[in-house]
Image (cartoon, rainbow, N blue to C red; front, top):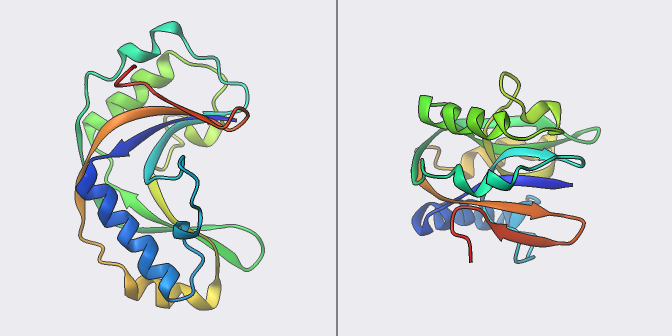
Length: 168
């Protein structure tokens, strides 16, 4: 599986990691427990096991940095009786243009990441039992804005990250 993701500047990254920490301290299974170097707050733009990426992929990031605002939370069903808790990202014209430009050049992305089906979000916790959702909500300050500063490619098969917006 590969995914193309937007990551955040330091202050936004820190604020989301603080969410993870507050949730973990309350016994809620947040992403704070996932300590892999690849684990950082992000917005997934595209994902798929069979994505075909063009050689020009690195030329699509002139729109960064991109200001982002959050607007509450999404709760997605996970396994029976558990949920994914995520910060909702305000959909702006600039974000939709960037997303559309990316998808105009790739193929094989999962349907839920395609234009007209995509729900931009930043995951905070996975496998949250229903009885902990209220506690989780009480721990979050939902007024947050920030900035996406980089794009990256995550490849779960090789367990590698590659910068798309700041090539080495």
